[in-house]
Length: 593
Image (cartoon, rainbow, N blue to C red; front, side, top):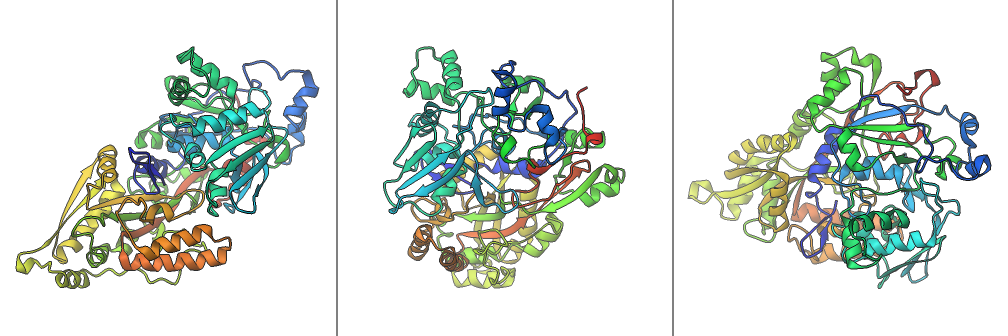
């Protein structure tokens, strides 16, 4: 997860999206009421120009007859409920609802990720190529790309996307803007090519970071939307980009679905709706996928309201929050088992709970002190009592199952007695009138608060005076941003490609942590083309983290949720329960009301 300081630096750390992730983890997918299925054609309500022949260009499946010939039954609605997104603007948003539930399905990236394996795969781009010196990355785009209003993607659209995302006045920055500004130059010489150039040889991870972040936007839509705010602003100017950053909507995209209303209208209606985009290239290229007609989200922030919707059968998925489990839910409400199946899985974006220590100020500038404090978190108890066995004890910063994960590393020690001895060796002893005093910032979330509550007894046994300071997410971020903290419990959310460089390199990590060997290992891993060799480097890096303990790793959580039984091919993969291949038997599909 990245966050950015006021001077423009960004950290792959875990707090500014803390609120978004906590909400995301709590609702993982929650539900929504049945609403009317919009079956109108794409765009402004007009049919695709040119009649049936032209429609076949945009919809290679051939319209309704073609849909019937697809590999799986077509139709049906997937209903969910999510908090209201702050913005859907692809240039600025880091909102978890926008980046996980809306934009991935309305706005193609150059490459996306295979839902089962997590590997990058061609999407809007057909392929890519590096120059020999790894300073130039070229993407070749599909020649059948059209926006959801039927307009073909042109070189002007590509240049507008790149130039606007990279503009100095674009703030805040989405992942797209961030990874493009990391490059020295980005251009689109024609409607089928995007070229990105770097000042230095690019790290191995640069391709996946960039390819899975850049979303194609329609120039004409953004120009019209900006001119409604700033009539005289010309594209590329500071005034234009500043106005574009204020927009809440993404405009038409090239993805398999399209928005049917503005974000403002969705807020008024309390509902956000995506319907199939028949102009999407995916309709012909992926005949077994994107079978549902619509995805609907009620904008509901309250967990109790979501649960009520579940009991009424108005939602298709639900994940308990506040410490409850699906098993407990079904015990109290056994009738739910008739309609919903239980799924438990890990997902790529879910990282781990951890404690960040401020290594730049005494007493946390001492690795022995940090290691002692790390021994005061009883991970076995946390896994059992807080996470109900849904997860595993964290031993590394990668995902369990990845080659980079240190499976052979020992489970972190829990020992208040050993911790007390280590602290005494550093002169901290309550008996001598010099106890160690530590303040830990705690986010406004029951799981995080429970973690600190359970650790409090061990801190006391070790002779450590613990102050747990509950803060709202904004205040916590401000303290963390300015390094005005000693410890803070957070949730690390993973990017499409896990690159620990931005979290732990001394250049600008959020802990003030510096170790020359760690820097060297992270730099070498970024440049190493061989994954086998990168694995070796990352294993050594994680061994050093265990010695230095700039962070105390706690738990890798798992998701547990209910999904309505009418959905077929709902197999969890690396991306979780991704509805790309969902389908519903014709006699079970929800229809217009």
